[in-house]
Image (cartoon, rainbow, N blue to C red; front, side, top):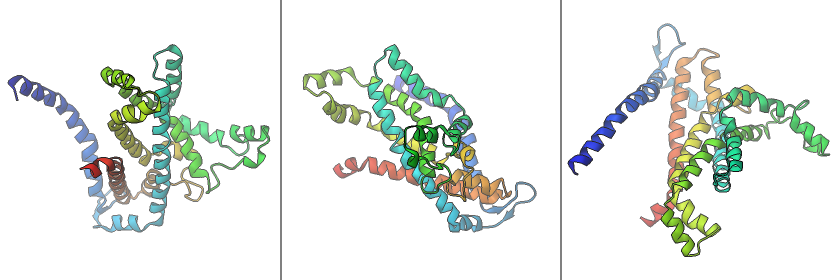
Length: 295
């Protein structure tokens, strides 16, 4: 390595030091601290009593924890197979830099500007069984049998909750995919045209393979964001009725702050981190399976 390259590398590492310190202080340290307090019986005040693995064992043995995890898996699947494909299709359709396409991109991104609490309230009223616009619309077009208590029926309420979560989070992935496609080398585009690779052939053999790493990052972000989903679900259902829409984050909140079991809540949050890491690892293994076979 040349002296100039070594200096540049050292300068870049030096520039990253403040970010690494802040990330470690505000992310890594709280995770470690939470895992530590998971070994204690603590109400948030007073002396914490060492409890060993009892909190972690109690969480794992609680059926509500696994029910919450199952509900979270529904949100994860809906987000990964909803947000990412929709954002990818829209990025291909809205790639041009004309004013009409810019307006549509801004409209898709607009939910990210709104508060998640506001989004939850809006969709709560959309789904309202008596005054909700969704049931009113179905009744007005003669589809009365389709009208449902969308947030009260255990058979459909998790799927109903998935819709606003997908709708509200398409924008960031749309911007990421547009940036990735616009940064593809022009030489590759020209070579594809010369070889007659257009339309679907160009999409599946050139565009998607070249932005595959970006798609994998989007999937990681999607899984991580879905597993910590809280605001919208808490505003719309509070995890009810009868815990049918309980997610890991709402389960942690209700098990920690409602009954002042901070040690138990710390154990839940630690297990959420572990499950998130396992799901992300599984997704990356599945998305890399072709490369693994080749090697």
